Length: 216
Image (spheres, rainbow, N blue to C red):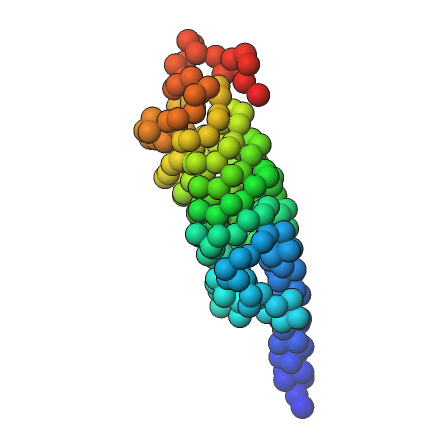
């Protein structure tokens, strides 16, 4: 065997090991989510932790490198919590968990999903505030958090999301304070923020303060 052939085999072996390692990390992250939810419709029945590659699981899409890029579990009747482990899905582009019964807070680790394009968590029962680390999702275009039980202010850091096309929406929550009007937020209609009884309306530079009292 020539030296070139040996080098090629070494490269292939390292590539395979890296692929398996990534698959294990992502499989563990997804199975952590699986353990945190009830699944009455058994849509996650194929999520077998003994399989090295989660790309064979239903509702999971991967790229050519066998890295998870989509999680499609909208309207799956799941009940449970989002887990911080989801932040380990480094190439995830679409997190679709709308119209379930997810409870608890949105983990700050979701802000580590730098490839994320769409975050759809609407029509759940999520509580707590909108995490400021979501402002690190520089590729995010769609963020739909409407019809939950979210409280607190809309983080001003989110105005830094230059690619954000739809912050539609955060309606039907319990947000407070004022609506940002800078950055991408200058394009959003007031309908995206309706039915938040403690939300005071668009900020007027120099007139409406962000730190209004009674907003927690």
